[in-house]
Length: 257
Image 1 (cartoon, rainbow, N blue to C red):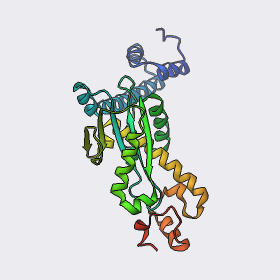
Image 2 (image 1 turned 60 degrees about the vertical axis):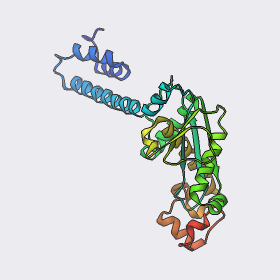
Image 3 (image 1 turned 135 degrees about the vertical axis):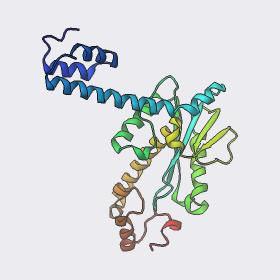
Image 4 (image 1 turned 30 degrees about the vertical axis):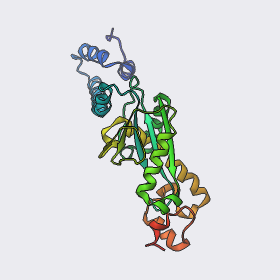
């Protein structure tokens, strides 16, 4: 690796595309270079690798439940999570995901801690790399008829039943799902502690957000594309002005009508 005649542009490109091992070699070779521009490039690369290391360490920490189950010879571990228990309108969505243990997907965490761009990118990667996934929902009518907790369990069960691979163990965010004969473990804050549950939370969130954005074209006065059905001031003001539509959960909006 020759850096004697290397320009700042060339050094920038080398550091942008290098591995950590290559970065260490470059750093040693330019250690004596006193130019501020070179030092800034090295420091920038150092910060990038530290950020990557943090992401990898967090990801590995979130694999602990899956790794423990694999040591017990469970092969198909499904993570299950829901999105949309709190909104005033729309269905509650649930997803089930069986990840491929040979394919890491760095960055998986609670979908609420990710930007929309990050969620969309990760959702595509999860769908491409996982062994199986399924997304289901319980309708507004089912939420009103059965209450939100039971409707959530119904959506989760539908997601599990729709998987193309039958799981032999289920990790679920906080809830115990009724009517499931497969062993399951509810984990409080599971969407941030388990990569499987986190993956489910991400694809469910992306799917439900898209659904609410589509519904906004039918009911533009409620701004569903922005509030996703949650009870923002603009949303509750619209309910008081226009009344409710068929998407609104009647048991949720009775205080606003």
